[in-house]
Length: 371
Ligand SMILES: Cc1cc2nc3c(=O)[nH]c(=O)nc-3n(C[C@H](O)[C@H](O)[C@H](O)COP(=O)(O)OP(=O)(O)OC[C@H]3O[C@@H](n4cnc5c(N)ncnc54)[C@H](O)[C@@H]3O)c2cc1C
Image 1 (cartoon, rainbow, N blue to C red):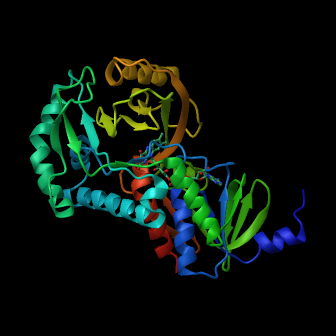
Image 2: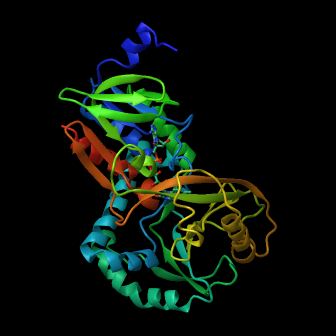
Image 3: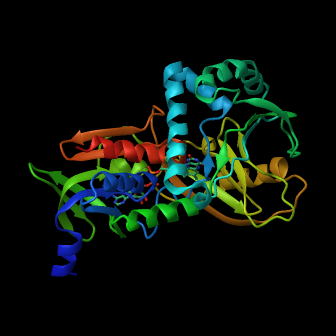
């Protein structure tokens, strides 16, 4: 199908910034660029009918790292690096809440809990003995203790009687966040085209020639925000990592409230609309889950259902309502990659499992990189 004169003139001519990917990062970058350059023509290309990566699939934890995760990170990062990671997550969450408003995204600060399996003494002891040290380390950011101990008031089974509670952790409604980000971007004059997949690009002195599955055109700048799919079009250290999730049907008098981390964060669950959303289990098959293909596996889904039945809701009848997956972008380092690849091409990728927290900031950092 040939595009019309009007279509080419109004959508694909004099494009100043083309952003690939309408996830949290791509949309925030577009919004920030529009504030910086109100007259610029900004085009977002998204291959899915809806954003089709992680931003509309995630668990909606507004978190910045559980105690065990921070202890683990200190094995491969310096204290300064870990502090910087936590600081970025906090600043990113502040920016997200400021951009959209707590009411819009249904931000609720119920706190976060880290649970420890009864059998996992080593992890539990290690966390208890490092708790004060980590609280001191984080003191410059929070000015008070982040990790305190609480009794198992939710009556989970098979876990240690005390869990680690973090009062600063919150949760959001992921769908509301993405819906309002899309609306905000469009209201500022950003153009978004769905069902368009970028296949390749070629930069010359004045522009970037962009080839998609539907048409080819030129843009003054190209910004890549495709996270776990980035290796399809650029060579950076980012691998796909699938994460599987399920949600129960509404449960009467559900007593569980908050965001919960289990087994170093490899499992996570929360309450939402009287349901339990539960995800994780990638550690059961790291290699198999290193994929860009959406889907569920028996191995992981069985384990999620088993933990739901035996640990999380041992005395409560429940039914599974839906199952889905999302694709994250991970690498050797937790730090996201925000960089200028060449004169006119930029990227902001590798958000790991923290994109709700840092996505807004990474979008802004990319906009600040340009010009
Ligand atoms: C199941 C799950 C649970 C999670 N839970 C949390 C959580 O609780 N808290 C948290 O902070 N983080 C969480 N995350 C991580 C978070 O969702 C991601 O870090 C974040 O959404 C990444 O945003 P992004 O914009 O970089 O990438 P994405 O949202 O993946 O956006 C990239 C977009 O690029 C598009 N795209 C890819 N290739 C092309 C192409 N060639 N042409 C056009 N478009 C293309 C994709 O369709 C996609 O929409 C979770 C992730 C998953 C999968």
